[in-house]
Image 1: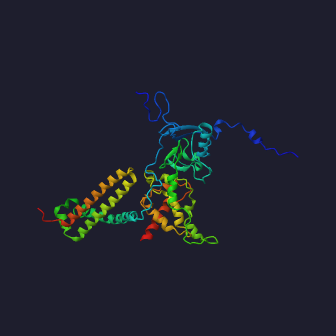
Image 2: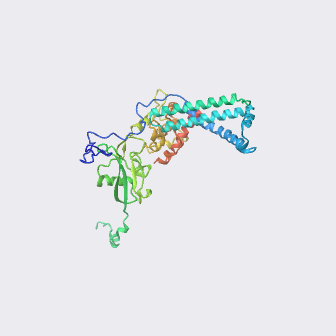
Length: 160
Length: 259
């Protein structure tokens, strides 16, 4: 082992001389994403308010939609064994169930995506990782919503 | 005329208090030390003290600083829970060292003392409070009125109007709430509970006329909407302010203002 090598405490293992001293202090233990004078000023937008409110309202509606969905799919009328192509085709023949499933898809996806957005904002420390995680999240969300919407409206019960 | 003599007879008549009768107990203080002039790492250091359990953690820190190790660095000013300088993380919870009695925090086990979290540690228990005060300044914590001429008499307020924001006037800016907030730990850009409490104090003051501006500041990305209602701030507040409730009231004011 070289004598100049230092341990984590900043003290050389052999000579015991401190690497850090009054004239050469160690870096301070910084807090993540500190508030500084350069912190962006107010943007005067209402997006965060709308997002917060959307989470509460969509959550209430989703409780009804999802529990109704689960009861119909898994409990009533023979339970899960009845679910097949014919069952889905039969339900989507009615605009009521089309709208139900469409509302559930959109609300669940946006609710979940917004929740994950706040998780990323809270926990991803570096700006770059936040940006990439959110880009991935938004891509997946938009893709799933579009694909699901397309299937609900273009579903063909006579497909071979 | 005889000068009165303080009567020591009672004490003298009793047998000498034995060691078992001593009010003093041995307490271990486990303090998180950081000195950038020595090492880049923070380390735990244990101090053994003979101390009366009815004394406060701050008294223990004083004993250490004055009798054992003068390099121990911490802030304190009034030492009576008013100035708010000695907020620290004691046994994993944010408290004022001057309001925490040793007997109340299980002195059988080592008492851990750390700097408050989420702010840059400068030395030992001293943190850089500037980002905290920057957030405080950003909510304009002073009376703003739109009238151009100063009134010639006091601004009157009814007792009910005064009671509306009474809770949030108690803040001493010790940062115990803000540095107990998990959102603030990860993102110091968040205004934090203390700034919101002090905005609340003026938003709900009937004499103040800049509530709109303050609400606008707190409506932002790093404002009240980042609160996750974990109630850490309410638990931490040494003044018993219902911090989370104040934040919720600001949220409600923002929503009712808009819809």
